[in-house]
Length: 292
Ligand SMILES: *[C@@H]1O[C@H](CO)[C@@H](O)[C@H](O)[C@H]1NC(C)=O
Ligand SMILES: *[C@@H]1O[C@H](CO)[C@@H](O)[C@H](O)[C@H]1NC(C)=O
Image 1 (cartoon, rainbow, N blue to C red):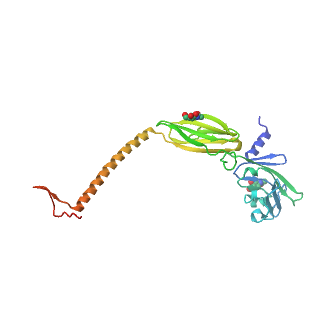
Image 2: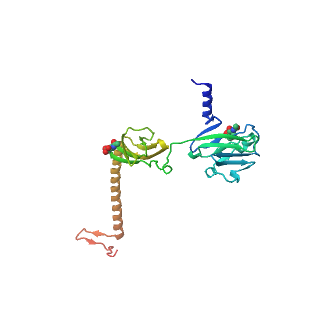
Image 3: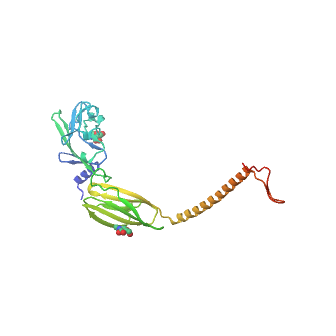
């Protein structure tokens, strides 16, 4: 049963912000932007005040009466350089929230927002939780599977037998054949382990023309990568193809003959040979010039 407290929790979670003891938790997906909230209880105009954002000892962002990291204030941690901004138009409402662009897993952790000169001095705790996305992490994580290897093992005019070889790491990867709509195709699977790595071989037989994709997923590191192949199966179209080929070939032959005849005619015309055979023995005409 839902208690009013649960409902309250749900509403807060919907906004991606959950109140936790002594602070706020912000949950965002990797590669998106995160707004970390901070407003002193006095709600006074902080345009001419100082506030400082830190994360586990790192300098994230500092604002001091109009001067901040994006216009010359030094010593910001490299991890946050060029990615953190405040809300200028919100300062007069006492809002010292910041936005961190394009959050990475490394941005997860505990942040504090401090007003060192306010009386009494105010400190706020904000926890940022970055959720991993399933995406291509080859080149980013050492154990990430490379692109799977697709081969056509066998084919007839009606079907094609495709094989996909995917490599995992310390855990068996999920390997799937999908059609162009993302439907998972039935497949025969074989798993082997060599040198602490898992190898998955997946056979599927396809009977329709289309794009087919082999997808390798390693949940433990949120890595996903795929390869694609195009299969062409269409008996009817192929009968058309061969008729077209024959017509084309015949056409070419006829055209070739016509060209040959025209060239011969041209040669004859240039040489202007006249042969007269009737009556009596044949003789070449007076216009015949042997040197031509
Ligand atoms: C502070 O400003 C940000 C950005 O406009 C906004 O999302 C947030 O709700 C504001 N916080 C408060 C307490 O008004
Ligand atoms: C895939 O098909 C080939 C050829 O028929 C066969 O040798 C191989 O064992 C099959 N692999 C799997 C996983 O079924």
